[in-house]
Image 1 (cartoon, rainbow, N blue to C red):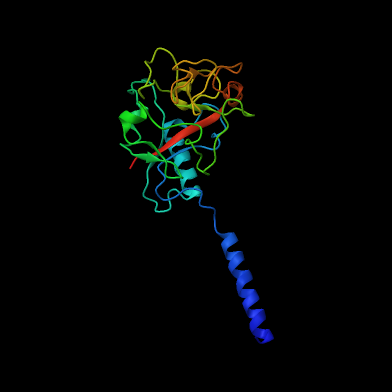
Image 2 (tube, one colour):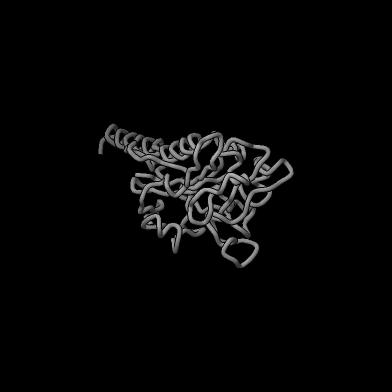
Length: 228
């Protein structure tokens, strides 16, 4: 092979590798319809309301390649409580009808009933938008607490006791109901094993700060579902 041809071939191969390296990682497939956020928004229980949380899910999905077609509507699994003349919103009513699957094609639940019953959500299946397993109990740091503000059946709590950090607008006073993404807690009971309704947040800052969420084994993480 002439020297010029060899040089041209080498340059072409190098250019191909450079182009491949420049492509964004596609942690999620186009069929992904569920993930657990790899990080929280970072402002404790103040998510900017439901709209802010939904936008966060949408942004992470887009960046990870799970919304390449641009047609999926992503929603955070969150309830809000009745306040200021506005009715409560149930998390279960916001996320579509299913089925939902993670980036590896593993089905989490086929429908709403299964999601709130015998679902397949575990530490190994609740993958992040990057396709990673999130730290659970026994890992350092433990990050298994997930914001939901919901009862076990996916409905909102009564307005008497704050369980949504003031409908996801407070990073100081209040409390948020948390689920365990790894289904493990301090006891061998239903609450400790609950993915969406294990225990309320608490802490010296008032219960809704980022530090408060971290103190019980969380990071302000969210479950995100494709609602269509």
